[in-house]
Image (cartoon, rainbow over all chains, first blue to last red; front, side):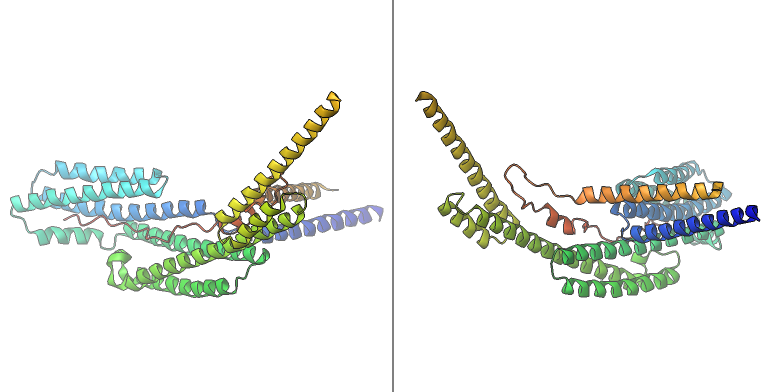
Length: 331
Length: 70
């Protein structure tokens, strides 16, 4: 009976600790939820999404190039140069995977674009020189890409990465704006208009996400920027970027105005406390400067004047005391 | 106390330590520097920090165009 009681106590104690642990986990999750995805994480995610698109596009070109090579080879044409270009393009995919930032990926994309251009020029030359039908070669390329599961899978990966990146980018921006508005509000600022503008941006973001989904479905293998069905999504993206830019500027101005007011009030308070202890005429001048100041630079200038006056007064008093001491010693 | 309870207790302590460490880091990040030599407590850093996270980056297209092969 005693043993059973002990076991029950043990079990009860374990359960209590387990419940406590779960509660703490929930608190931690709620605590962490305040954090927005960092700009660095978003930038990294963007690089990954761009790489996914590069891999998809380059792989498609490699398959298409191989179809051209196979066609020309079947006509007993020397394709050594074309094969070299194809291999070089494949190498760029590995380099793109290692790329650490957007610039590095953009450079590799340019390299890839040049290789495809060179291939096209060389292939067209060979087709012309050998009196071949360009439409037949193009058909061979189209056939090679038709129902290519590997390319389709790479496209799905790229599109999902792009959509996730866009969604996380916008969520992060909204989160950062909400945090900034919260900070301004806590510091005593008025954020009613900013909140209303952010709500408008949120509605635009929902619209953009729906438009992007539709565009990716309709544009197939075409990039949104060159596909007429993607025009709406591209326009909405521009609109969201512009609204976020304007909101950012307005938020900054509100934050700066609040900062100026807070520093001005603190300075005026210091001036009031310094009355009678510092030169009154100079204090009146500084007070006047503070009251007229509208920018942080002007407030900081006035603050420097006050600091200098305080230092000079302290020095003067110290010198006076030293001089008194010397006089006393002489006497 | 059985082993499971000890493990759970240790995890809980680790979690708490993690939360406290994070809180300390966050607080340090936003602490203002005040000029103590002149009794100046009017630093603007506290309020400048309100909007410092709002960077100027834009949502850009991640798709790339490589052209036609023929």
